[in-house]
Length: 366
Image 1 (tube, rainbow, N blue to C red):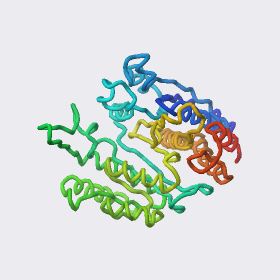
Image 2 (image 1 turned 120 degrees about the horizontal axis):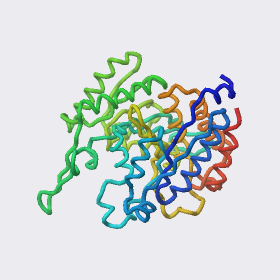
Image 3 (image 1 turned 120 degrees about the vertical axis):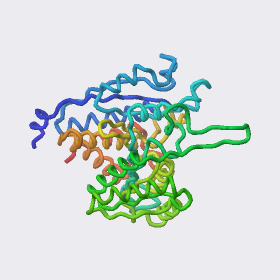
Image 4 (image 1 turned 45 degrees about the vertical axis):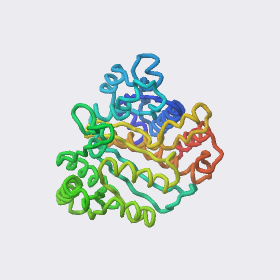
């Protein structure tokens, strides 16, 4: 299809844009700029951006870090880009509630957290041949703020005793397993189930066994399993052995940070939170308040996350122009790194805006 044809065929996208805290406004703005350039490069209609409030700005404006107005607006857009939040800096009464990102995930049942880790040429990576994706179950597990209908899964019967409930359900395990196997079918066709069933045989055993049951529906996919401690060691020793890892919430959070550092830096660690119908681009890194407003933050993680979001939307809606825009973003990032251009966290000299300008220029190159 020509660019002119795609312009006629594609519908405009409405995407929410949430700056968040700290470096959020800078990296979210950088992601928006790159998406706009990529959509223009492939002849797709311009994105209709819907700016929304969250975090300290929302507390000052609405008395709530995640106002109802923002949640209501998210239900009306195609998808959204979420900047990092710094809830540690919120007034005390707002620190005890579920952080905004977790509340959004729960509200829209974004049960899958997709976290790729890839080493780019030109980036100093500990594991130079890493190219994998961690598929993290995002709605239950050991995370106390997500596994109860009301309240949290942590409690203290006495001042000197704290307890936590881990939740693993067949339904949640099935749907995250399907995500992993569908993703592996587009890659190198291998899934590793990561668990700790040797010491948690009921919860982690259920997760492992359900994943193996779902594997029978994907006969072309090779499947094996590892204990989480062995998987962590294996990642450090031979990260290239992995294609797609599927695991529960806490294990996925830890392993994906490890994989991000092995591939170069958490500043480049992209992520997508999704359900079958909704998706949110959200980088792995935090708000880095010490870098806020200094034009020094690495924007790559959220730019790549935005590219993942376009790919997810293209798959959901069968829209090839958005798929091409996603590919342009990833290729532009790779080309910029290969040219020796990077931000300070990756040993480079480029500012946030300079790096983004380089990406923007490269998305127009075929």
